[in-house]
Amino acid sequence: MYKGKKISLILPTFNEKDSIKKVINEFEKLEIVDEILVINNNASKGTSDEIAKTSAIEIMENEQGYGSAIIRGFKESSGDLIVVCEPDDTFLATDIHKLLSYSEDVDIVYGSRTYKELIWSGANMGWFLRFGNWVVAKLLEVLFNTNTLTDVGCTYRLVHKNVILELLPSFKIKSNFFGPEMMARGYIKKYKCIQIPVVYKERIGTSSVTGNLLKAFTLGIKMILLLFTLKFRIDKTVLKFLK
Image (cartoon, rainbow, N blue to C red; front, side):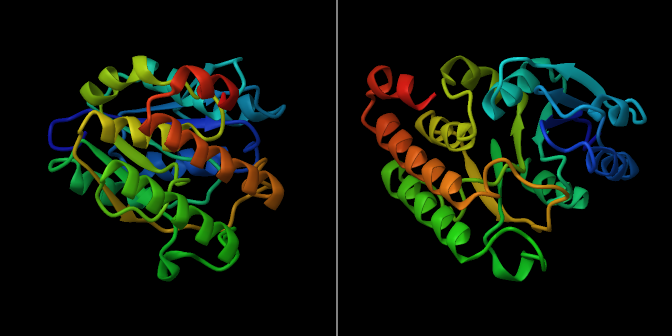
């Protein structure tokens, strides 16, 4: 627990069989997370066997998509504070302390992977991805008059349970750009948010999205369309296409 508050950790998994046990173990060692929920989103064969070697609870979510997995995790979480992370070993478990330190002052804490000093050697954050995330983040910042933002793709984040319960009915995106939808809808609801730098490491295995520059570029374009859609409230005509 953290200052009397129960902490839930959500780890969505699809292609992280070789790293998931390591990541779970690193969070377990901190002795601060009360429940670890692994959302199995049609994950690679053998993933369940790795999860079974840990204290994590495995939940099956058959509707494919990062957003589907995270939304399911939010619904299943029982903690007062909910942390989302990737089980691909790109983040440091100890950075959860950074997120928690701001949780007393704001409703949502977002991580950012774009600070050069914290991008470790081998991390998949070259100039193209770094600049692309920064550009879309600045667009979100301008459109929604937010705090300073430098990354829209970072999945390491913390949110209060009461906040996510209010946001859940508004979520429409089930795919890989659920992250910026959550950010935009939080700002629309006027929640207090902050973005802080976190360490970004080399991934174990290959990402199904950022490992391909064309896919990453296409994802970026969809993120931009999504932000304009949410800003000008044309959800019904465009969100159906973006899903």
